[in-house]
Every structure is written in structure tokens, then in C-alpha cells.
Image (cartoon, rainbow, N blue to C red; front, top):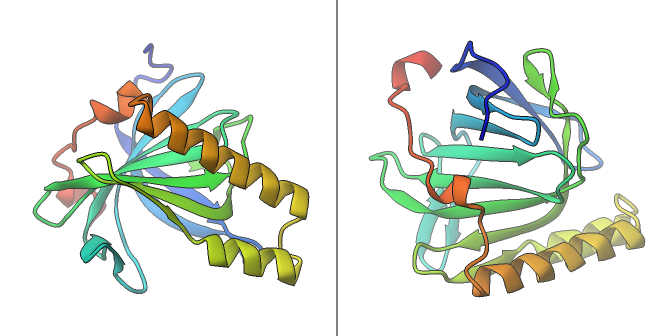
Amino acid sequence: MKRLKTNLPRPISIIYRRPPGAALTFPGLLLNVTAKSLTIQSRLSVAQPRQIAGQIIADTGYWAIWFVFRDKWFDVGKVYDRSKKWLGYYCDIVKPVNRLMSGSRTTVLTDLFLDIWITPAGGVYVLDEDELENAIQQGFISKSLAARAQSQVQLLVRRIKRHNFPPTQVKEATLLKIDEILD
């Protein structure tokens, strides 16, 4: 895929909002920009470790290569532990954005609560369905937008089972050695 910018990699801020909360800012390193996607490497910082099926899949100090897509209902992170061992893919269901960048920041990504974890062996876990239901009940998200998020999860799960997701560019990504840049 053709790069649009040549001064890469460079620092970037990922702006992420989960209704009804304020947007949060996460530092990263912009690795690639195309007309349809951003590739960002970042070190994770989480309030609590995230565990699925007995394995910690996200913790402070873990790494991810995030892929943000224009006009898609998802982003995808290729997740690594502190020793840089690949753990799987984390997919957030988000409202599509039609503009990827705003200066040195991403356009605000709005989380729609549902997530998918994909193990290296192809196991699939749909996450946070209870959080989506609570968001509907609290009026943080409309029923129609929630239905669209659920429909997107079903579509992606079918694609995962057919080995058509995540995209090739995600599967082929590798971590850069940038520890010192993001410290």
C-alpha cells in the first residue's frame, strides 16, 4: 500500500472516546499513513490487566500495533506481551471515521462497547456484551447504533471463521524496536 507521508515513524496521539465519557489520549508512534488506514505502534497502559480464558491479553507495558481504518466499523490491534511475544488480535467496534488524522492526532475514535479477541490459533471471543446492554439501558448509545455494532460483530466473526479477517496488513505487521522513543 502506498504511503502518503514520508516523515515516518513519528509521534502521534490516539484519541479514544467511550460514551458518555470524555475522550482519552494515548501516545503512539505513527508507522504508516495511507488514504484508507493508519498504522500506530503503542505501549499499553491499562487500569487493570485484561484476562481471557486464563491468559492475560492486555497489561501495562504490553505492546500493540493498531490499525485504524477510514469508514470501517472496527479498528484492530496486534497485541504483544512485555517480552514481545505475539498474543493475538484485539478488535474494537467503533463508529466509522471519514477523516483519519487531525494534525498530530487521530480523529476521535468512538467506541461502541463490543470487542473481539482472536487467539493465534483462531479462537474467537466476543467481549463486553454486558457493557453494551448497560450502555443501551443508560441511554449512552441508541438501540439502532447498538444493533449496528452487534451486526458488525456478527459479520466479523463470520469473516474470522472463514479466515478472512483480520486484514493481511494486520497479519503481516511486526513491532519496531522503539522502546526508547516512547519512554
